[in-house]
Length: 381
Image 1 (cartoon, rainbow, N blue to C red):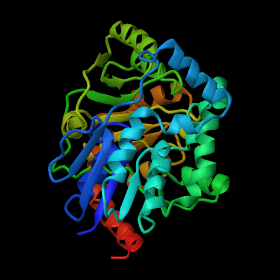
Image 2: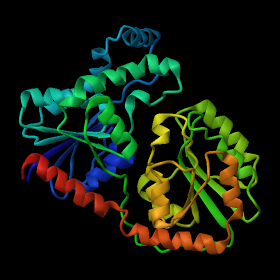
Image 3: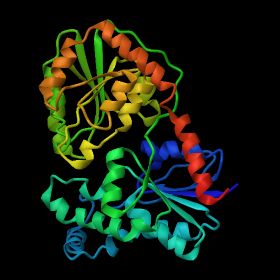
């Protein structure tokens, strides 16, 4: 059995892509998973390392050093931070790895330090977004961390043996910007033995991250404008406490919105199965949002929900080809509201039945066959 290392700059079990990758590979390979505060994982050797200090944990001196490194483009110190040096020591002391899978771009140089000592190891990277434009609407971020991620891409991506990405738009951009050919690898969840549920009113669900950058206030506008036979449920997470608190306070004043507590990754599909329609509200207000193909889209399908979405280029063809739901005619929030309020139970039932059919194909089994074939060809089995 060949050995595969997975490097993750967070807890790998809390993020869909690495968590499902572990699930797909652990019966075929000996897995060594390196992650921030990585827990014990059955059937896998796990190696935890501490998280990077957040802005609230840094001392004034540490914050000044960070800002200075970004300003002066001293990027080496931003890669080989004290916590990642622990990761590097763990990795370098792990012999006979045949493949390293990188789940976060910033860890690619650390993987390449292993390759320097072990030239036969292959390197795969999972590019979930176009990193130099992660927060492109923030000019300060573009001038600092945007430059940092651009440096990482320009300096190191040409050294990978295989790159995965999540949508055709991202695939084209990495080819255009860095000459990197990526393999499209959708974010498909595990299969669940479910059948479409039935409700007396049409229950909408949105789950995932909210932020000003995503214009998530439109969820409040939608909820406040729903017809009486619809109700919006929201499971929201956010990295922006001030925005999140304001959002919650406003949501509590809208009777047609229910805020629900967070649900573990492995529970999100059976939990949301009780609803009717999954909602996607992203607008093309940045490259990554425009070309997003979110995890939640496939989770909605696996939960046997219809999908109502803005007409994002990666999502609209899938909704139409599987007849899963409807896309608004444009990206205006009022267009989504108009569609939602026009729905009747017979349409919703048809969307859910079609999602049930699509769930048989758009699940982890399809991805597992693909990733096993890719890895087999890469490491020469």
